[in-house]
Image 1 (cartoon, helix red, strand yellow):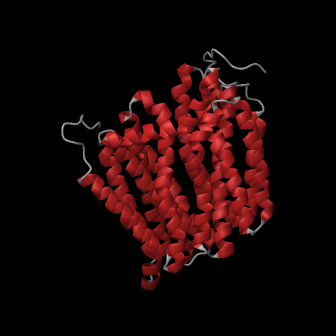
Image 2 (cartoon, helix red, strand yellow):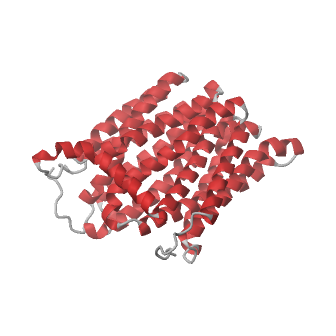
Image 3 (cartoon, helix red, strand yellow):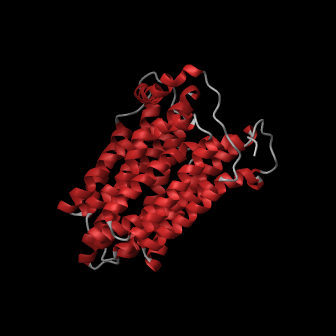
Length: 423
């Protein structure tokens, strides 16, 4: 199969077989990955009853992304992108099959999951690099919009719906087997992609390639430190990611505090996911006249207060004889919408305020910085919850995020004489 060059629009994008193939790869792996994360969270907690073990699980997802994302991007640029998709997808499928048959051996689960995370670090920039190879330039913006919507929806479909429902019906190991099928289907789909050889580069670029990730990290830090309109939404994203990460780590413990089995965490995550989807569409319809900064701050304040409320419902509501499950469902739905308002507003503000000349090079590094900023609360949350209680740790984290949001709203405004804040 010859490589694709000089692409011309081939009709409606959603009917384009090449785009449909790469979209199927993204959708199946994103949904499958979220299903696997939920199943592993439940399996590890049910086996160990240790929040620290769940923290270790989440860290095995995050650490490769934080440390290696920039280097993986440089590597992908020097490979045939088709093979950068085929080989990691094949390895990930086999490793996920190992997860499905490993049972409750937590040490093996963590090692296999670390391997899967390493393959995902390569697959993420490879998928992004393949899109402009198969999509004409005139349709590229539409394609990216579809991919971003899929990325948001995959959490609701995989982590908040399919994962919880299938764990409840058939157990975590069965879910991991289903995810293996998803990954295998994605691997087969990669075989039909066109060759995408690396762009020719001068021969003396090896040293530059080694220094490029460090240079990009420096550019990201300069962009953050030199412009509050870039730094502020990044802080909002990091704070929201920290609280979401802690909720993920302590979710099974939270279910137990509500008098539920850990596998019944669907009571919390399903309305949370539905709230995220509702928040995305609601912000598009109602948030056009609200400044990005204020929408992000109000969303973050609301999210932190609702998270604190969710953590308090079990210990307080059960003792008072309140209907805790309906209360949690409503709070989780509203919390998901508030989280969506924060993240969508912050991401939009970043796009609007970041200089076009550095946007593409720096955005991946900024994502790594957000992940790194959220790592410490996740690292501490599990062991600390084992010493005190999960709901209390969740409340403390929510209080910290609330302080960050209030600081942003009152003390981290535009500098005097800076350009007008965008709407």
